[in-house]
Image (spheres, rainbow, N blue to C red):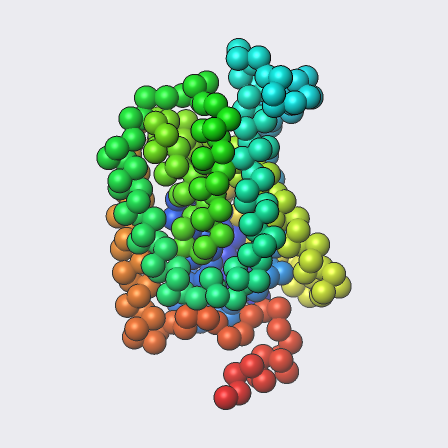
Length: 295
């Protein structure tokens, strides 16, 4: 990977990680359009560290209060009705459990069957249509202080859909938040809170896994780390902008973008401009790469 490619992919990861447009879709499509190989699992694990650090830093004061609330109450059954910090701390923690369980159970499916760009294209469009419906029927009159454990679990279980590339983790959780009546800003904020344990656990798990297999980053360390740093800075700015944006705007722009991208992706696949499953990744050695292309 060249430095220029690392910068491009870092910008792309940072821009899309926390927006309801699917970073996975963009990281699969853009490299092919630019004639690049699939960055591979190692790159994905490393570059995701940037947004992880960014979201933790952005919510560091909130997280400190939520962790203190968890330690103070010691159990979700002992949360005083007025202790919002403890409530949100426990809701974030418990809301992550469904994704953790199904992430482990469906890991092989995610890496194989779900990786098809036809699945990604369909997911982009379907989630957009569901988001249209959520915008239409959601009352959007509830804040985070009105949430209960059942509400947080509904959003947490919806997060499982994020295992399908193209749905977008923030997309499904914001949609679920709108369905239960949260304001757009509150839905986005809780979506970001849920992302902290979700992407942190997934990112660290993937990093440990690939480092064990590859015994380090080798000669790709510099571009990979550069990409992660860029992704982190951009992601921090995106989170700050998006929360302000959701105070005054609907998700209509993202809905239109998702549908347009999904249709364009189907067109590119049909025309053979890009492949549904890239056969070569940066994780593969040259010999293995050439073998994989042999009929």
